[in-house]
Image 1 (spheres, protein in one colour):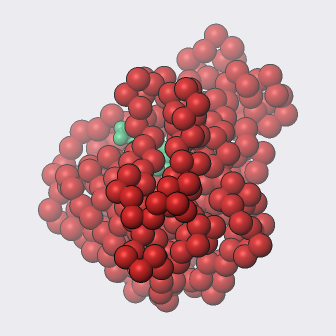
Image 2: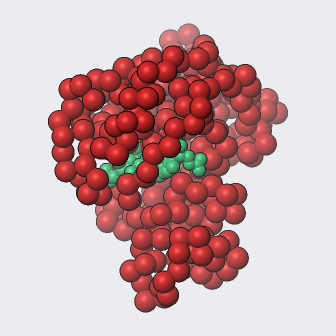
Length: 292
Ligand SMILES: Nc1nc(=O)c2c([nH]1)NC[C@@H]1CN(c3ccc(C(=O)N[C@@H](CCC(=O)O)C(=O)O)cc3)CN21
Ligand SMILES: O=c1ccn([C@H]2C[C@H](O)[C@@H](COP(=O)(O)O)O2)c(=O)[nH]1
């Protein structure tokens, strides 16, 4: 995906060096947009090795309306573990446990998971029960896509100013809008992401929303067309500069194919085994530290 590599280059060459909340330091550009055509393949990064499973599990977790990492931990998805662990370290229950011990306790002790595994009212809560007031944005979206295709209000908003201070991490991919083509054949999705970790987060975010667009398209009677990714603070962490340069030097390979179980008729019914990719070719893995 050349668009992604162009963005990496653009930020390295034109970004400003900035301090950031995590203390790592970034190079950053404000405002950047990329478009991915979903008709010619699925946009899973090919210039480093990726796995769709953690991305799909995280999306199913959002769709369920779940906000506790237990669901992810039980499925060996590690991407959210650091955040509740940081909170746990500050709690009176903390006894010097390592993150591995913390994760093991989440897996085996339900009471512990309930108390220390929740991220607060993050994505899942806002999507399915906005402000804990019963507003199911995802169900409303499915209804409007099905019954009012040309609406300009096909929106899901995860940014909730009233609850943002109670979240382990305020939403990054915050505002989503969908668009049905004039011939009612295609569905496109645009995401506004306020803050984007270009090396670690963005490849996840692109694949996640491309997958969600495909799932919505197929269950609402459309074909997925485009994913448009609009970013506010587009940044590369300083400790990712070298791996990003390595990645830019790699030639993108042909995109893989997404295979969704055609028997699933509702976005709420997908299970992990209904989601597969075929013909995925990639360069080798590239590793970078996550700034917490
Ligand atoms: N600094 C930062 N960057 C992020 O991308 C990010 C956050 N924080 N906080 C919340 C979530 C968690 N996300 C993450 C966290 C870790 C990986 C990561 O380590 N990815 C590895 C593979 C990990 C795996 O498959 O288990 C990678 O190579 O992409 C990716 C996204 C995205 N978000
Ligand atoms: O889906 C995600 C979630 C998070 N990120 C990145 C963007 C930033 O680097 C951090 C969040 O820090 P803030 O100080 O709250 O902006 O996580 C991402 O890229 N994608």
